[in-house]
Length: 215
Image (cartoon, rainbow, N blue to C red; front, side, top):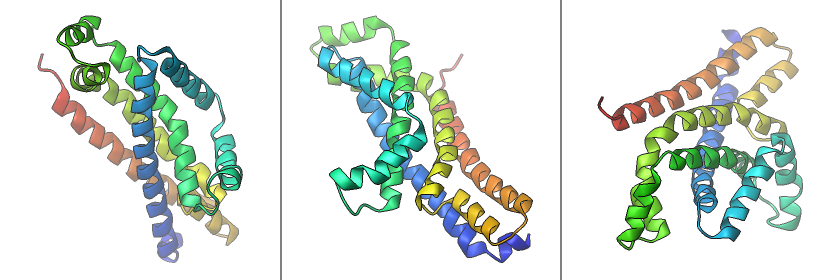
């Protein structure tokens, strides 16, 4: 217990750092994932190509390599002076967006094709059909895999600690360097991650219950 009480401000900063990068990366991943999923089911071939290339590239690239590109390439050629938190959030959000895209696309494929055809027959555009008809029906199918994806995102945020981002795993390294017993340090780090992941799981369970179909 002393390892936490004696270093509570550092642990609090690490926990809030993990919570912050998880939240920001989740928003980036969700928005980009929805956009790329719409590309993948688009009737426009170039958009489908872009969507397929995005997913193939990011899903098959190690997350650590994306962090290296984000921290050492982007500041040099695009926007210099960006904070480690922003760069880490972008790397984690872009990486996770490919998984969100595939989960959303799978949900879209569960909606009967006749729904989209009926929408087009009454004059709705592709975007209107997707937003008003297809995505609302696909949401129930998409929620369970999205829950797993965002829980994985939370655990992947530990990579950011190696790139000067304040988060829980960075606190663990600090405590280890100061000579604290590694076992209680890891226990507190694990409890911090469990608190965040259980919260994410609870939120998605509430959403699933609200959207479930009565049988």
